[in-house]
Each structure stands twice: as structure tokens, then as C-alpha cells.
Image 1 (spheres, helix red, strand yellow):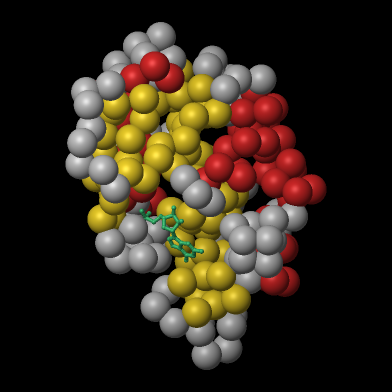
Image 2 (spheres, helix red, strand yellow):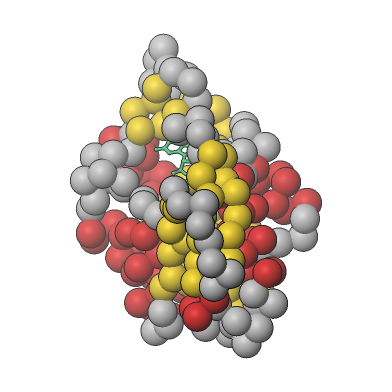
Length: 194
Ligand code: 5GP
């Protein structure tokens, strides 16, 4: 097991409804040393890519994307969840359905912060059905920028998102892929990765 799988096995809590709670170290209380290690690991995995921006989605993606951007020495941009329907043409907009909250949000990124010259690494904490990543990909493409790859802390391999994104031809790296989890016993099964 790698460092993140070990931590999930130790402190992750399996909830009914296919939800894995990692709020004691990843997305509510945050273990900063772990975040920094995640930043280093994504930097190592995407070291061959000419990354100019790291893109994520608020809120919990920010804490993962920050150390990644720090390692690459590039800006981090986060898509904002916007309630306003009054989008003024200065924003790239995507519609994202939230897996955990079961609602739809418009997410926006200012056109000032992404353009055709950018090579983007997309980062998020979880991958479930892939809506968040597809929204972020559509924003990068609307900007005429290049998606160099996608980095996820925890992919739930029994949901369709990972397969959809890989089938679209994108390079997707997940630090931990959970293939099964049992809310009765709390058992979490990880996919073997090399
Ligand atoms: P997707 O768009 O891939 O269906 O879901 C990804 C988003 O939903 C992530 O940004 C993450 O915030 C949230 N999410 C999905 N599954 C889980 C989960 O099992 N646990 C937690 N804490 N968040 C999740």
C-alpha cells in the first residue's frame, strides 16, 4: 500500500450510499504533511508534462491542488460554484452535478486565468461518477488550453467516472483506487497499482 492507501485504511470511514469519509485528514481537518506528500507525488508522476496551471474545483479540491501547484511552481486556479445566473461573458461556465450533495451547480472560471497557451493539470480529491472532472475538462477546452492530465487523490473504482475519463483518452492518475467498500464491516479494498 502507498502512503495514502495506508492512511485511508487507518482513518477512512465507509458510509452507506457509497460515500467514503476522509474528513479527519483530507477534506475537513487536513493533515498538512499528507497534503504536501500528495503534492510531491503528483509532481513526480507528471514531471514530464509542461504544466503552466493547476485547476481544481472548490472547496475540497483546493487543499490538494495547492501543494501540487507549489511543487510545479505555477498558479493554482479553482472553479467557483456560482449561484448567480448573471454570468457576464467573462467566465467559462460548466454545469456540475454534485455526487455528495445531489444537486447541480454552475461552476465558473474567469477568462483572465486560463487561455490557449496553458497546459493544465486538473486535480480533485475524489472521483465518483466523473461529473466534476468533466466540467473542469470542458472549461479547459473552452479556453483552448491543453489538458495534460488529471490527478485524483481517491478514485472510487466501482463508480463509472474513472472508466469514462480514461476512455476519453485522458491521462488519469489516482493515488488510491477503492474497488470495494463495505459499510457493515468497514472493509476497504484497493486496486493493485504499480
Ligand atoms: P463526481 O463528480 O466524480 O461524481 O464526484 C466527485 C466529487 O464529489 C468530488 O469533488 C468530491 O468532493 C465528491 N465526492 C464523491 N464521492 C465522494 C466520497 O465518497 N466521499 C467524499 N468525501 N466526497 C465525495
